[in-house]
Length: 314
Image (cartoon, rainbow, N blue to C red; front, side, top):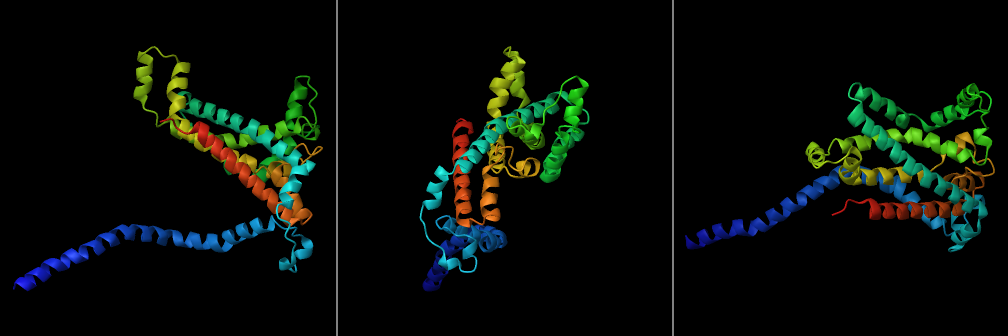
C-alpha cells in the first residue's frame, strides 16, 4: 500500500514539468501554424529573389548572361564603386533626397492641420471629410499622375487657366527644370496627406481631455496647449507617419515616370527610375541590383535617424 501510494504520488509530479512545458510551447506553435502559409509564400516567391538580387549586385550580370547565369563574372564591389562615379545616379539620388526632404515635412504638416481641423472645428459631416481627404490615397497613382499632368498643361491646364484669369501667364510647369520637381511634390503632398490625416486624427482622439482642461486652468493658450500637450503625445503617431511616408517617398517612381519621364534634363529622375532604366531598358541587372541595395541602405538609415529623434521620450 505504501509503494502504491508513493507511486501514485510520484506520477503526477513527474508529468507536471512536461505539461507545463507543453503549455508554454503550444501558443508559439499555434502562432507559427497561422503564420506558416505566409512564411512559405515569402520563402518561395520573395526570399529567393531577394538573395538572388543581392548576389547579382556583385556581378556584371547582363542580357548576355540570361541563357547561362552561372557564367557571369564576379566583380566584387565594382558596381558599388561605379555608382559613386556615376553622375546620373548622383543626380537621381539628389533629386530623390530633395523630394523626401521637402515632401515628407509638408505632408506631415498638411495632414496634421487637416486632422486638427476635423478634430476641433468640423463637427458635422466629419465622416464625409475623412472620406474626401482619404480618397486620393486609395486611387491609382497612375490615374492621379495623368490627371495632374493635364491640370498642369501649359495651354489647356486648369492651373494656368485660373492664373490667366487674374492676369498671370502661367509657366510650362513640367517642362521647367526649376518647377518640375516642386510640381510633383505638391501633387504627392495632396495625394498622401489623407493617410497622414487619418493617423493624426486617431492619435488626437486618444489625448485625454483632462490634460487640456488642466492646461486651461493653468492659463495655457491654444498654442501652448498644442506645443506642450498635443505634440508630445503625438510623438508615436508622428514617428509612424514619418517612417511610412519617407519609405514611400524614397521609392519615388510612378509620378515622374508618368508626368515627366524623368525630365526635363533629368531634374525629376529618381533612384527608382534610374534602377528601372538600368535593369529593364539596358538589362544591366547586376548594376540595377546594386542600386536597389543602396536604396535599401538609405531607407534603413533614414528610418534609424527618425527613430532616434522622434521616438517617445521616457
